[in-house]
Image 1: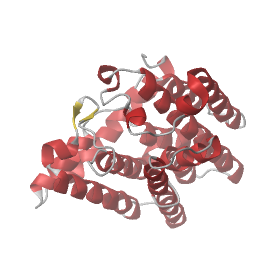
Image 2: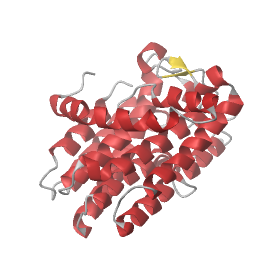
Image 3: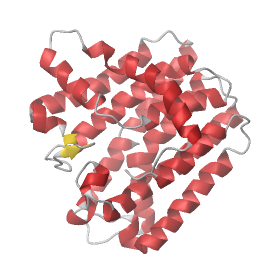
Length: 294
């Protein structure tokens, strides 16, 4: 799916800012091979969904992209580390990511693990060292830890792994996995942007709820794509969820039911934006993410 005009305009405006900042710290240093491994995954492409949402959320509450940039960079480091580790043989054992060999296939498992570790550490370093209001910086760090840690993404990944060994589980448990595994970091993305932009409590609450809803929608669409798209379309192995015996929205509700759940989650996200005057970009991204093809 070609990006809608508003989404493309946001990408054209914000991607240069992100791409310049993401890899610069890893071009000089003693551990040259490790730096190469980190840059390899950071430069693999993608829409930079989490950092872009962080910058857009900041703008939505009256801030500027520059104010939220440290948070945006930190979020992409966390997301990239999670992809490197997710592809490892002990996790999803994937050979392709965004149409290229996965990190461990190029650099070996040891360097892939260390690249993920270093990116996670750098995420907190870039936020802690940023010239930000101390209260905002502390709140952003806490939100990043919540979204990435055992109460968030890592906890969701653990439940997802455990779910492969279960004979069955219900929709509520699947929602919990999705809320933690994917939704927590997306929620943190928009809430960190809101905090760094100086959001009022009502706007911050609305953006947190928006983030939770698009996080669910994003993962439902992932489930649908895994069941329907080809490897060439996805740039990674297709049908891996079914192959590993994972429970997904299509397996529980069927494709029609999954698409209905996706539509409902997207509409919920849009409703939470109603009170924000600068909501057009975030609304466009919610619709786009629900219809993306990879």
